[in-house]
Length: 514
Image (cartoon, rainbow, N blue to C red; front, side, top):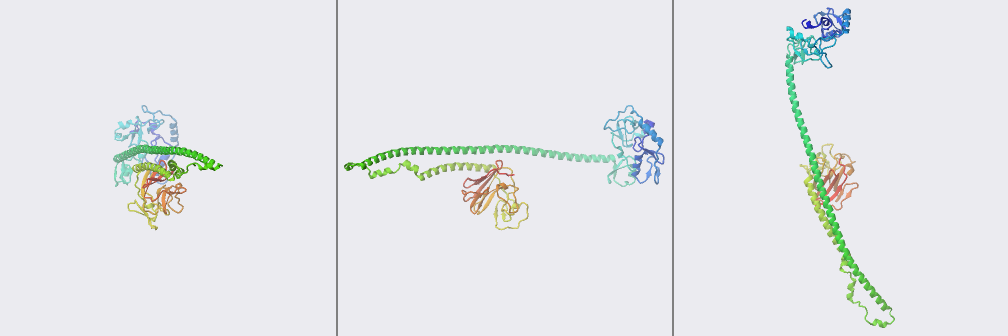
């Protein structure tokens, strides 16, 4: 009664004591109290005993709810009559919690009472400050769905929390079925939950901090990697530019050398031709004289001095020294060999420099993966050597193992340029190179062609061959001892070197590594 002292009596008559709102489809219980039809039906569906929420009268058997027609008509008139909000209380806007006691246009609630389970505007909140019996009620900032804080069984405000069954309790629940349970005031449980949330929040913040630090490290590493790639790219371009420039210089030097030798030979040839032409003229004149003498009718003329054809003249049949040098095959071969020697020496110096640069910048230690080895291959304990035993051993099944090709792969794949060396000295047959990771491992239908992702070079019965399409026999490769393999990832090139002879054996180009 004290709560309603400041409320319009006409308004109080039209409020349901369960939902604390204006009646909707009001009905009367046998004891004479009015409730919303949905409110009383929902209230009774929560328990086994039907009783009045106000006077606690218990009803046995079917309960017939009556409709008070006069009360219903008055309610309709009340609903159609607009009521101004209480003076001094602002109207509720969209999203605001409304006052439960205001009728018609609702005022904005300023506080919610956890004992009354109702929200009040500034006007209807006054009794909680002036009535002694209401001062102990706990007021909080406006809360929606206060009915969720009402015990569904006893229609009383919940005050405690059961930690055993993890539910909220009203005083009646606390006295009855939860009397022996671990219960605490709701405020205590709320504080415990807040403390738990603070701990969780701290852990989340720590994890967030670690993740952000990891993100920073990854980005920093990516930046360093990009910078390193750029530096490597620039250095590689400089190396290859220097190599190209050196090759161009050697080519020009060789061309000049050949042209100079050709000029000297042309000069010698011109001198030889002039001498030969003089001798041809001399011999023609002598032939003409001899012809005249032979035709002379008077034989007495033949008794005089004849042109000299002494044995010393036989030396004139021999060519001059310059002509003999020009026409001597052995001399030509000697000159060609000297030129080739100069070219080989220059190319050898260039290749030596290139191989040293490859070792310094791209050398990689290859570790073999036994799980990929064909059953007839035996991998050493340190996984750096392999030999073919000639017989197929029992090996564990593995999806990466080759069962037809006598291959074994390295443990690490590469998506950049790299260089490695293999000792093949004393081996009757071998095969080495680079394959695409997706190469077929099982069955007989396996191709060694570059189109299938296989770039290899091997020795088969003493014949060295690059497995191109078609295969290329390398006749210059003799008694190989050590082979270097260089993969230039960006240029899509795989090159093989004879490290003893310091020569390039073969290069695959336009390789599709992925």
